[in-house]
Length: 217
Image 1 (cartoon, rainbow, N blue to C red):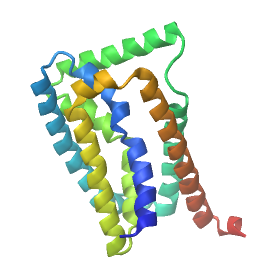
Image 2: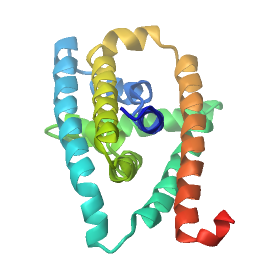
Image 3: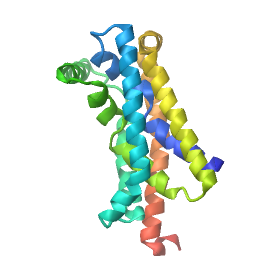
């Protein structure tokens, strides 16, 4: 297995799909459900997320080529998308009561809309909360970068590990939610945001350098 490739992919994918950041929304959307029903939702989310990740990983690079977009151009765009997500994570949670009330109102509205949906496990929990623009960009870019069996193996192991972590946290959401304080979630979000920002900068620079070779000299 290519350790360097796998480590970079793990850092990017886990930062984007961090289950501890998704946890509050999951608990809000499933607040009217029993623990057994929440776990059933977690299983459904795992199935949907796995299916989407596999399709994106296998077909993503072919799709962007179909539209005449080079991998390097997509790498730059993906880096910019990840940068925006990283900056949002680094901003942390709202600190004023007005901002907090506004955020709670927005989350409550999203939860209310989810209750109307026949299957909230897919929307909004799987898409766009877990498999959103950042996840899609990360899967396509690293999937296209994999060139040999060691990298394919690393890609698969990382994807399975991240999906397993998401499933485990959501499956035991009721218990973890009681143990994980808001402050701890904020700290984790900021640490993941810093890691993601560094990966986004490297991704954008690599794409720009390939598109404009003169910058490398």
